[in-house]
Structures are given as structure tokens and as C-alpha cells.
Amino acid sequence: MRYRSTRGHAPLVSADQALRAGVAPDGGLYLPQTLPQFEPNAFAEDQDLGALAGRLLRPFFADSALADSLPGICASAFDFPLPLVTPDPAEPGLQVLELFHGPTGAFKDFGARFLFRAFDAIANPDNPITVLAATSGDTGGAVGCAAEGARHARAVILFPKGRISAFQERQLCCWRDPVTALRVNDDFDACQRLVKTAFADKALSARHGLSSANSISIGRLLPQMAYWAQASLEIFARTGTRPGLVVPTGNLGNGFAALLARACGLPIGPVVLATNANATLSDWHASGQYTARQSIATLANAMDVGAPSNFERLSGFGADLVEDVVRVDDAAIRQRIVSTHAASGYIACPHTATALEAYARMAPARRAERVWIAAATAHPCKFADAVEPLIGQRLTPPPSLAEVLQRPVRLTDIAARLDELAAQLEPGRAG
Ligand SMILES: N[C@@H](CCOP(=O)(O)O)C(=O)O
Image (cartoon, rainbow, N blue to C red; front, side, top):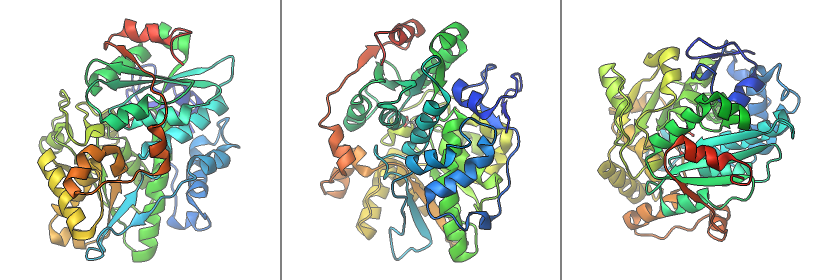
């Protein structure tokens, strides 16, 4: 399999080169040159998500150094539960795919765990990788956790000061070597721009072997197709109809992974994106005009993105593939957390609540056409400060989240400037 840049001014590369580089040399994002096609029954023998992921990803890594180790990487990366639950028995057509049972309580665990196992397999001590990850809350925790103890890749995590929950900040800053947390005195988009500026600096990039663990890396998106595949196959087998998906959306990686899985033949119906008050995608869908803008802070902070990276992939791939974009402001997020809990006892994080609200706003006839799967992208305990007062109940964190609070915190403050980031990458500073 070869990978091409969305901008078309970079050579085709192998999977390993695409993973190592993170972004293409022309500043574009990598996409597979062709897409394999699967029949739903191709996965009939797969017993679990790891086995399904190994089969799904095989063609994407056919000529890669990972080819032989792929099944093992998938089995160990995806060794946690992936429940598809019915939050309200009175509404069986709504299923929630809980993507937050990994070690850091967010869907980012799937991609981050895959990617760091892959980095350790394709890098070596003479050619190590420095992974830069910009985070608005959840990616950084997953990357730090996946990178802790990595042999040939270190992680440098950039997060926006004052824009994430107290728990998220602890979770970003609690990992041991080779992980470094940098608190940037700006918003998420500034962190993301800074990372992209670092990639564009050829000398800096070559000196440190820079790569990405954000969804700009195709190595983050490909493994994320696996859970969409598993859930849609389950509903298709049960109902004979392709389920619709409702995907909470910030940088558009999760939504794009769903579209990619559908383009590979997985039985996925319409894809609806749910955003918070950040209106870049909803305005684009309504008007056809894409205008990136400054992000605004919301309760669903991991989705506080004003310039979604994967729009670049989506626009070339077929923007009309998105059925709808539903914008949900903080008041509606709060209400949805309250009403969901009151109706069924189900506890949603603010991001998950955007998807539940988008589903609730669909016309009844459209809801009734098929089963809809809403993604639950983060554990509500990560947002206990917001959720507990709304439901009038204390949340009990699972052990892996509780453990974060016992760990020492390490972080460095920087301004959103390349020279400050570059200084942190020097030996003896980061990792
Ligand atoms: N939602 C993110 C922002 C970065 O998104 P990514 O999917 O491109 O890593 C976060 O939680 O940090």
C-alpha cells in the first residue's frame, strides 16, 4: 500500500514512512492511495476486536515492517472492553458505543496504543522518533500513557493553559519517561499550529525525527476504523440494516475514520457529526464555505477546535459524505446530561452528550429508519466537575483513572513560540 499527500506535491510513501513522518513534506496529510474492499462476512471468524483490527488493517500495512507483527500489535493495543449499550430500554434504536474503557478513559486510547506499539516496531535506537502531540484534553493523556516506557519513541505533549479540566491536566502531566508535558500559554489551535510549524521546519524535524500522534497521522486514523467496523457489523448482523453513526467531533479524526471504514465496505449508514459551540463545521455544512476560526472554550473541551485538521482529508475525499453537522451549545449539553440521566440513569460526558443531543434532534421518522450508534468518547469521571452537579451524584472513577491522582505531576510552561518548543526538545530537556 502506498500513501499520498492530500496536497499532491509529495512523493508516494510506504505505510512506515507515513507513520514516521506524521505529515507529508508538502504540509499535506497522508491518505491511502487505494482503499481495500471488504464484504461484511470477511470478519465472520474474528472473535474479538484485536482479531478484527488485524484483518482490517492487513492491506494497509501489507508491505510494512509491521506486517508480521500487526496481529500481535492489534491484540495488545485493543485488549479492553468495547461495549455497545442501550442507555434507555424505552429507546432501543439508540445504541451507545462506549469508547472510553481504555486506560485513560477516552477513545484516543485506541489510536495512541496502536501507534506507539507501531513506532517501537519501525524505529530503532539509531533512528528514534520524537512524537509531538497537541491536545485539547484527551489525546495527550492517551499519548502519554501509551508512550510511557516506549523504547524508540518519546512523546512531547502540548496543551492549552486554562482550557482543560483539572483531571485532564493531571492526566497529561503524570507520565514518566519518555514523556514530557508542555503547558502552552494559548488555546488549542495555537498548540496545533505550533506543532505543524515544527514539522514544517525541516532542520528541526530531521534533528529530532519528529512525528505526530494526533489524527493528522494516518497511523492514528486507521486503527480507529476498527471499532466502527465491529459495532456496525454487530448491528448489521442483528437488523440487516446499516446503522447510522453520530460522532462527537473536534479535529474530525473519529468522524473521518468512520467515513474511511464505510468507504472500505463496512456496513455503515449515514454519518452525522455532533459538535460543541465551535461552529466551523456546522457553518461549513450549512453554507458550503469553510472558514477556520478561533476556538471558543466549552464544556466539551476536547472538541474545542476552530480549525479541524481532518477537514483537509474530508474535503478531498468527498465532503458530501457527511449527512449532517449538528451544533450543540453548552446549555443544550447540560440539559442533555440531565435529561438522559433522569430518563434512564445513563451518565454521559459532555462530548457524548453532544451526540445524544444530535440524535434527539432528528425527526422521529429518520430515527426510526435504522439503529443509530452514538459514540461515547470519554468517561464521565474525566469531567466530574461538570457532570456531578448536573446529576446530583458523585462518580466513582475506574482504577486506571483513580491512579492518575496518585502520581506526581511534571510540566513545563512555554509560550506558543517555535524557539521555546525547540529548546524543550534538546537532550536533557524533554523526555
Ligand atoms: N480532541 C483532541 C484534540 C486533538 O485531536 P486529535 O484527534 O487530532 O488528536 C484532544 O482531546 O486533544
